[in-house]
View 1 (tube, helix red, strand yellow):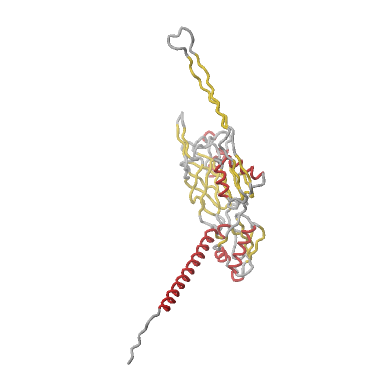
View 2 (cartoon, rainbow, N blue to C red):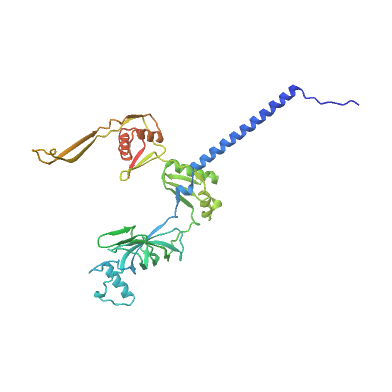
Amino acid sequence: MTAVTKRTTPAFKSALETTKKLALTWLLGIFIVAGTILLLNANHANASSRIKDIVTFEGVRDNMLVGYGLVVGLNGTGDGLADGHFTKQSLHSMLERLGVKPTESGLDSKNVAAVMVTAALKPFARQGSRIDVTVSALGDSDSLMGGTLLVTPLIGADGEVYAVAQGQLAVGGFTAGGAAETVTKGVPTSGRIASGAIIERELQFEMAQMENVKLSLRNPDFTTARRVSQAINAFLGSSSSRPTDPGTVQLDIPDHYDGNVVNLLTDIEQLRVEPDQMARVVIDETTGTIVMGENVRISTVAIAQGSLTIRITENQQVSQPGPFAETGTTETVDRTAVDVDEGDEKKLTVLDDGVSLQELVNGLNALGIGPRDMITILQAIKAAGALQAKIEVM
């Protein structure tokens, strides 16, 4: 019987090594492509926002409430009850409703203050639930610390009572001092009552019977409105939504969501959209704050910023004769120093066409320009037609 011996030729070994290298290269390429796709998707997800963060839904809104009331229990920091004072009239009326008939001379307390009570009625708040209220002094009260708000009806814009507020005030500020000095921290004439009002009337609004819903963009924009509509249509697989203007997207309720609008809004509010925005420069001249959008662009322009500073310093020196001098008197002599700075160290900077926000800031910082001077320069660039953005001054 003959034995068979297997031998691997050099050509076969070379082909095997080549195949291994090709397989490794192919796998490495797959990993690189997959990693790039994941990175791009992550960057896109970070740049996008949920629809619920950039729009408000029709009917889901707050309603403002306001009321007039009295705060009692103050430690001598209430309103001064002078003749005809509205606090005095309110106190007199309240006591009469409680069966007490006070005299004019008896209403001289400094422990009562007239206040305005404000609150926000949350959407779909139900009868019996509670909301926070803010209490602010209306008269000449010095502090509301330690006071208690009496029953105060809160009315809406239609004149109807929607809540009733009462409770102990929480005041963050205080005032303390004596005859020569006074220290005040915060605002002692304003306070809050957590869960201080009970809702007595509900706002009637039924979402289940709605045939269409309007989505209002917080920052109106044509491109953003269309992207929101496209994202909703892609999710629903139909043309149920359409932008009616830059700030509104109208959504018709699909048949499979009929009578279940809450589920529809829950599904679409999680969709992600990348908002677009107009190139805008916002300036607050009071504080010197400048906020520039990402899309701000500058055409080719040369910028030079220099300032003339004249500083005059007056000093008085004493001139007196030398020791043992037979003549001369001691006199006061004025000495004046004049220093002129023409800004010679400032340089001329040229910004190329289409520079980005970062390049604009770097170029202006290279001139040693502060925020307030930068405001003037940006306005001058806009006047020259080189700033491709809208300037808004607050």
